[in-house]
Length: 168
Image (cartoon, rainbow, N blue to C red; front, side, top):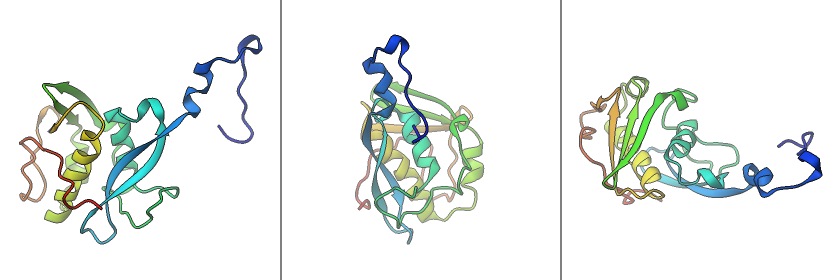
């Protein structure tokens, strides 16, 4: 809500649900650093009820660094606004595996990235998504088919496990 907006209460009665969009919690997003060497753990406020929602976390990750982020030396995964909510075709949880289906725009956005950027893209998504859901592995599909990958250095067709080794 902006400074010029207010909350109107039916019959002048305040209810807890009126304030839910205003209650924030911190989500940890893993974004590449400006040098392209490590991943920065960025604490970003998001509505509390979306903190463990994989779709909301992906949207935040796709949006890239924000002015309010505490660490300003982070880089975006893709050019700003390349991927949107519409590019997240489906998310499912089965046997502790988070299954993510993205649109072909995902592969188009990552076309031509270096092996280091490929690895950072993979583990920024994996580390961000698997910290707050009941999954311990991530499997990525593009258009309903196993992801092909970008540089050939990262096997996108397999399962990903969290790797906080090169995260700060």
